[in-house]
Image (cartoon, rainbow, N blue to C red; front, side):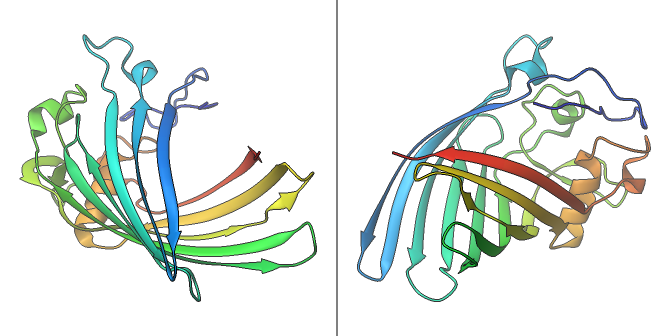
Length: 217
């Protein structure tokens, strides 16, 4: 639920809140000694973001993951988008959970990613059709017909999982998201929605926060 949406080129103008994305994930993991392996499928329902488009610009991914059950729990996950954007996304993560009390923990995490696009059409992308693949952006943060192939984003995160009951956990969190390459900086500015109408003047790094509620059984 986006409570204060911004749209490209509208400076600080904001619009009424809207439910803009629903994700459905099917996954399976298994521990094999020192390793944890798994895989799955994700459907991203983005219809409300494209409600006036002739087709829904939804997205689909398959992924595989392998992690080491050791210090910092290093984990590599490989995603393949198979519907609209047609890219590979490689995500390496590390994390550690400190138990502050029986019910409260502190989790610190970091990620780094690499994005390999296999399709780009700047005209479709700039038209907002949702079918333009994943293009590389130039120095002015404008989409080109070249495919993106470089390190993408890094994140530093801190969260505070709180066990409310044996089944319910509330987790406030904060993350700093930043580009890992010049190409990523141009792309993140070009994809930015809030601020100046000139893409090259937009932000490329973001501080975000949230609250997650989970129920396990």
